[in-house]
Length: 463
Image (cartoon, rainbow, N blue to C red; front, side, top):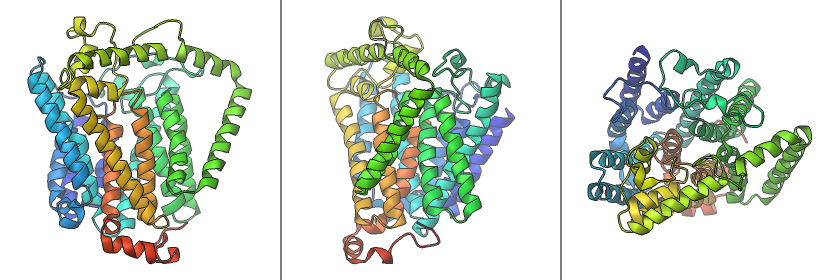
């Protein structure tokens, strides 16, 4: 109970700080939210967790900043698309047979958009270098706590929060050995997939912070150590999508900036790393590959490729039966807990976000969600291309690359209402707010005519 009260207190402090400084309040909540992902809640609060309440309060505290004409223009298009998606989800829930449970799930879709609004307000709070530095500092602080909590979990083969009764009791991931490691780590996030995805995103932004913003060798060394620890933690979660996602971010980042030589160098580095790993422990990789694919049999609903394909095909069949509004938000999440199993025979997991949204919200919902992600990526890429040498431009390119990576990772897991998605939306919103000057015709013309040396990463940062 004391940890629950501590988290609520930290959240309320973040809200109070955000009233005066949205950037600082946002940074505090970025640092707090991931480390309470699996907090054991008092009975009756599961449907409306305190983290969601704090996100609502934080959004209300900074809304006046986000609705300023210059800031609002940066996300009105994606805001309209996503609002339409949420409205459709609510209509789908009302038309479904799941009742209140589906409506609650549909309303939960609002939370990623709240994070986007908070991020826009934070990015608009003062000079871009300050807003971006605060956001990246919050992510780095959360990564420190998650990695530190993962050390005793790996050494003792038990999660400290669960052992102390402070966290929800998850499935026993310690029996799932991958690459010969002892179990899968969950740290404070309670689920290895979301822990791995968050680590992949946090490592990407930590590397950017270390290479672009960090001053002095001691701080650079700490950043490198944190990125290394975060990468190791990500591997120990055993999340394949996170490994692929982390590898994709630098490739997409340099491609967006049109630095093709860097793309080739990163790809070459990956080839070397894979070659060395296969040389050192080939048997473990072969065994890992065989267990992951195992095309000759379905071992469960989601542990291998064939099982996940069968899940996706089942979702598609349900979509064909309900093509307009779908079967209602939360249908598959309820199936996981044992409800109406006759309707979802063969399903034992939610592994493909797009197939899930298509089946639960129908064709229009699927189109709106994909349009939202696509439009947000396009806007971020365009901002990055306008000023590829400035801090805000490069940060936009990084957010676009990370969002592309997360969007691809979502093909193997449902991330819409999870911590990785919230953090990504907040950071992307911060990029929109920090780069809002680039979105105006005057700012766009200025960036196209100003020499790179006049708007490079000055402002106290280094190349």
